[in-house]
Length: 233
Length: 406
Image (cartoon, rainbow over all chains, first blue to last red; front, side, top):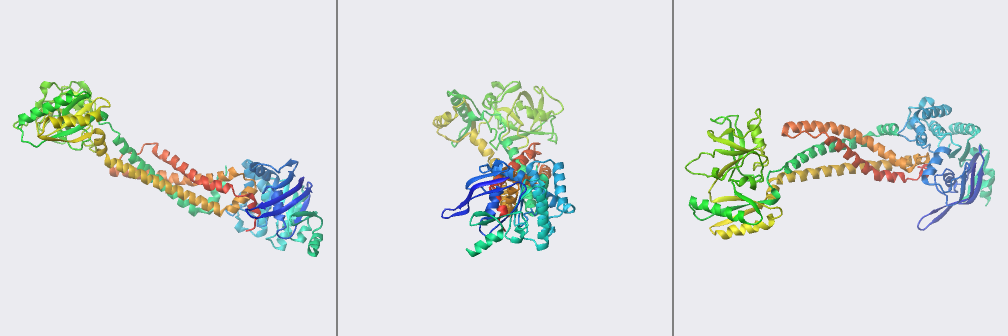
């Protein structure tokens, strides 16, 4: 379960103070598939960064899986990210110098698993995304869809409780996007909580719950409703 | 340990790493061989001359008036008497030379009389009286010192050499390599046919020429030479040298105005002058080694900084996937260790090869066994220190970078 209370994020420079998130509260239950939509600059990515412990929040509290993670040290945040959260990025974010096997291996090494356990998990995840035969390929040798599948395998390898996806189909054509979304839905059916940031309403519809971010505030409800409200405002 | 993936990733971007590995290899090669030369020269500089150098000085008396032989002999006796009676003087002697002076007298010694053949052994000759041994601070380890009665004045009419000699152990060992001592009582021949009876063996007294391979071979001869130019060597009690030097100089200058006193020199100055070339070489080689090490370190800093810039996003991704800051630092440290290990392995092989060539070409000593391992450790540490800055900078890259679009 993910619980955020009065969470705010302010970016400060010497002269400017930007309120990226303005004191919102949110509860995401175990096993939910949540989409987060909103216009550019609304705070979607900031929300994802806060949820994924990639950035520290300025105010409020954040509880993840029963643990207050608002004030963790950098080292503890790294460990929570590694053990409980899987990330899927728009631009796949595979490491170009590593082959598929080593890419999926990256978070597992930080977890400290032994070689046999890592291999079991890597092969299991690559089989799940249909790329077990591509272990020795480098990212540049794969299509966009395949790269995103490797990224999903990497995200799943640590068996995270939460999967955070940032525009996971943003760089894919429709066919590949559908395939990736089918995979995410399948993963969600397995019990993994998924929070997916997207700007495409059709993709957001695939989620069971929709959140809309606007001006740093988060609202529950169908995205069409909020887009319509935003347009008429 | 992430060695496997790091190594495989390095193979995808070899150029920079290969260049740094080669730089490390060349640096190690030059560094350890230069160190070998430095070590050899430093050892040479540190050699014991045999003298009580801290408390010994020399000065020369040059007569410009036309003195008869007997007058010159008398003046030498008077001078030595004046010097020896000074409080704080241990002893003094008139001699043709002394260790490290660079100029002196050498002769060939042979075990049988006759023409000098390949069997003759070269030795430095010091003409002294019975005070020579104490002034030169040599210990007669076997036999005895000269007696006053054995001391002669050299005679222009008679070129025969004195019949007695005190020799260093090193000279004795070379004269009789297969027939170890006792050497006292044995006879050697000098000047082809003149017999010299070994009355004693002294522990150590270097020849005047520091670069001569036979520098440890010397012989004291009981003879004084009444020339216009006389060199006095004075040994003082501990700590009295600097006080007595001007005193002795004035004393001799005032005692006879038909001469000048010059070349008042401490043994420290003599040693410094003798080894000025070696000291300069040490400084130059040390500078070269330091320069190369700094250049290598800068190369490593440059490559690591470039890699941090090139991999900024990748580092952010790793942080997002759970890498702690120490894990990022460790990544760059391991990467540098791999490059260093390759460079050092190549460098060690090259260093051994170069040393073999140098030993054969320049008759240098082979490198001590520990020099190459020590050089490898030193360069590895330099590499790790050099990469630490960029690695720490990399560890500060925020994980949120992973979600920023390129």
